[in-house]
Length: 263
Image 1: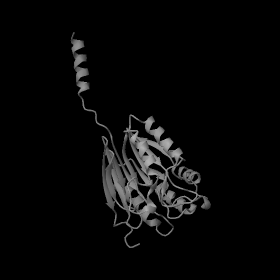
Image 2: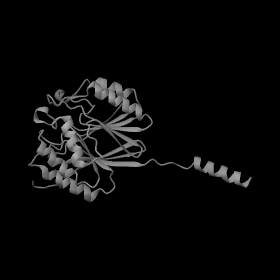
Image 3: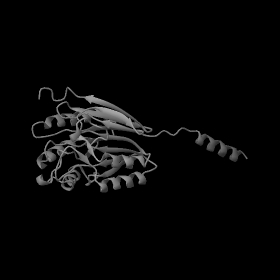
Image 4: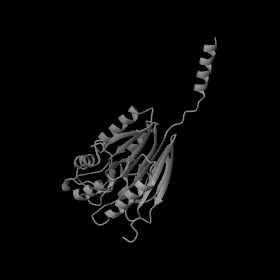
């Protein structure tokens, strides 16, 4: 009888013990536009992150990592960010790819994997996880005729639909270069955005879409999804510190005016 009472108390105590979800903390950098002349900014950023942020889980670079689709610039970019003490994740933007310059989705991402390590996917659309959060990267870059309009082709949207179904019981964050928010600059808008939004409406597990491209800072809720657009790193050296705690997304735009002062 005493054993049964102890067991019942243990079960009741367990039922009412609060379960705390883990906190995921990372840095988003977008639109670095690196070339041989401005690379010191990124090197200083890497040193700064290594010194200041011992508690972050990873750094993600959301496109336009290089200013022009040149392999030597991409190698310089990757050789620099691989010095980070945490994992770096990379996705391309419209400045990164151009088939005529031999930088296709395939060659670009294979070089990313070669430089950063086997943990990184060699594909432009990929998934990685941290604790109870699933992160999905979406490409949308045109490699044949590059331009500022993003275009998520049907096969990419089908893949996204499958991934959101696969992780239906998880909170999902999407990284991509092209925002879902409207822009007054028509040339930078997302082509056939309605098809993308229809996919998102089928699911209720996406908590945020994090992007760049607009070279401005905007954050808006749309259909229960937090849309985060981060200001460009190039010249002004901005980046965003993001924390996800129990499904809530907290952001802080960092302006590193002191980095590489005088360059």
